[in-house]
Length: 262
Image (cartoon, rainbow, N blue to C red; front, side):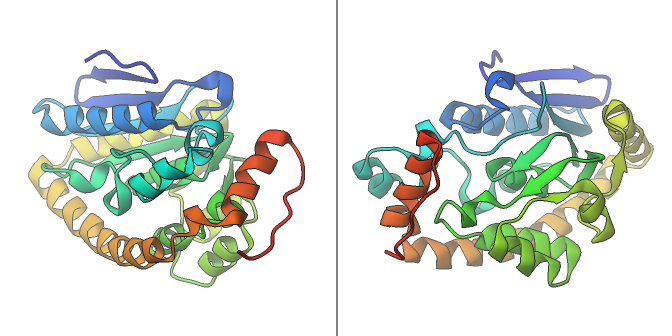
């Protein structure tokens, strides 16, 4: 399958899925969200593929949602879609939530892992991060709240660190994420892919059905919580508030937003 915004390659048992919009730090638009969904389906359906590694071209894994394309949609589109994301963005289940064969996916991240990029990395079963990588739940600053991101962060860290980063929206580094158990490895940037490959090779030494049985359990539990958080958040309709629009507009106009709580 030909892709416009990502790269897809399989080497032996390992599939490499690479975000490929480096000129805008791999900001995620509707096309990329749809292509990621298709790529994960392709990986899931390939009997020769056992593990996938997801990474990003250029200076960052992903800077998050493409604000101009997604968050400045006409209001009628926001109402129709029910969120700033496109129809095939994945929702609470994400791209991996619709898996059939439950194959493990490793995120190999560097630079920035923000917003939608944060969600993608947290969907993955393991995370290898370059030292100094900066993570952020951007949605709280965008007026959308960070409920689903709080769920995935709390699920993997199990402490109030999740509350802090979800409510303040502050950036934190790979080293801090490692301290709280959110990432599996923090290594120099030139070792990120090779470290992910080492983990993938270790996984491939095990019976694949045994591995997938474990993956299915861990994904089921976190996604059950994500569905509940998404259902509650959707009812708030924060994507239709003035503060949401102001945040996106201020970002594009390169100024400080002015919020009014409405």
